Length: 394
Image (cartoon, rainbow, N blue to C red):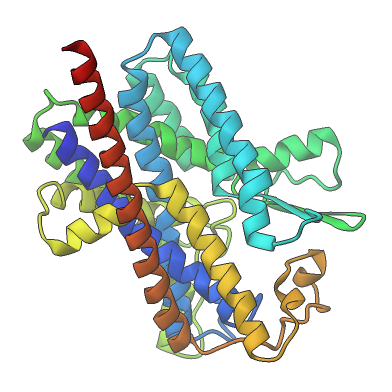
């Protein structure tokens, strides 16, 4: 498998899960604010499903990041990798704090600061600077140990905002920290996401140009099916692997929803098993996927950081503009600590799920054309640069 084909498979997967993320963010800003799709007493099948498919976004991003790090770091010295990873990690954390948080809140006073997927990726980059010195076997063992064993730490719970407590929140405990007029949110903890990056780093070996496509597909298929079977086994036992046990509800439909109602913050073993399994199967079957649908999602996933940030801005800005059209103050869509309380003016404001799906389709198309434009200008710039170098040499 050549590098171009490898990158297209990565991008196609990223494009698909990016579309899921755009749908979920559209739900967040256009459906009823702070509604919980996992609240079985008030949710519906379509609402639950809309949230559930977005669960594939984060595992795919962390896993592919690990695979790409394997290839990038393999071309540099250990010392160069340390500088690269610390620079990249610092940049991602700054983007999270100053750009992503603003696009999410539109609050110029930054009263709500969160560690979400971008910030967590940045923190994991720091850890990878040390793991590069370990063997692949050790990395696999650590990865599986983190993914399977992080629940053993669930009983350790901190309160307050001491340095020790904050470090623990960043490591393994989701937390909302109200502090004066501000709110600090930690959703994506280092554990277990570091385990996902490490597993992606391990799998990156099988995507080397000289690797066997047959062996790679077998490993992906076996790993994917084992992961899915592990989910159904653990969920059936209903003990270890998920802090939110399922139960028999008043109807079969609600019982099924309860079975698939999984914890994302921090991500449970069951959550990771049922998301990573299909991701691995997709990578196995989509290796030579060539059709207009693959081309569409490959383009959508070509510049994932840009698309993620741009789509957040686009969705939030459109939601704010929609408020004005509805004759309501746009300030309602400025997210502050009050937005998470019963004081939020958005509590009883929202639109149907059908409108959410329609709007998300529009947002996905806009992001697709934006990435297509960026790709065109990028290649045009590179071609001009190459042409200039050729003329200069001659």
